[in-house]
Length: 261
Image 1: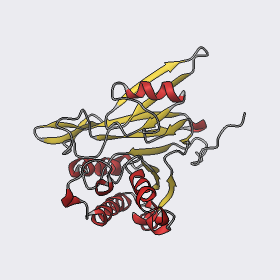
Image 2: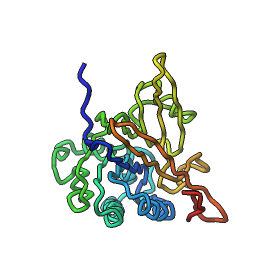
Image 3: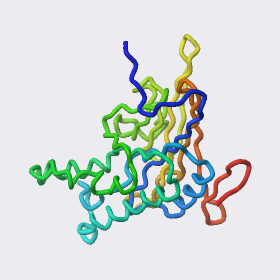
Image 4: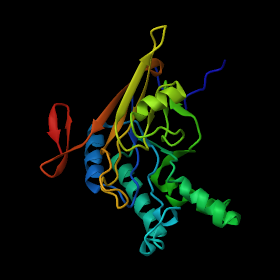
């Protein structure tokens, strides 16, 4: 059996750090959470940044009931999201940027296929062009169904399987049987098992960078934050969730033994 080759080649004995950021849902992002994330990434200095899906909400073309006043604002939403990605590029000029497609990103494809299939093949209507990936230096667009991994850890959005909202990391590991990190559920979770040979396998879900009080839900059980992964030789890795919490009306994080935010 041939093993898939990771896209990011890890140099021998060189630690690589990957930052996994997901679920911005521009223009419904949390400005405070993103500001805190940028400050922390400046300290963490990741080699690779993976935008793990649902960077854009695509509310105006959602199949759900929509506010009529918002239906004509798709271009401004896209411009806002592109500016958001550029903000990360300016903060991390040397990092490699990868972009994972999420279920909200798929709203564009579904809308075109259902209402204007003749336009679905236009390059100008593809997400890399609409979000100006060339300008932001995004080197790869990872489709939702792509099985993408770095070393021994797979990076998913999370909508690929029906996970439910209770212990999604356990559900993901039982479905995939591989190490994985994913978003979509907007909260942190972890589950691990050990096989008969003594090998450990685990799954982690990531927090979100969107507003925690969306108009369609009264009190969702979501958490702001992101995850970073440190690699060493042979693709071995350590996953480090960075959870934000509210303290005295502000988002805070404890990092390196210090309260920040």
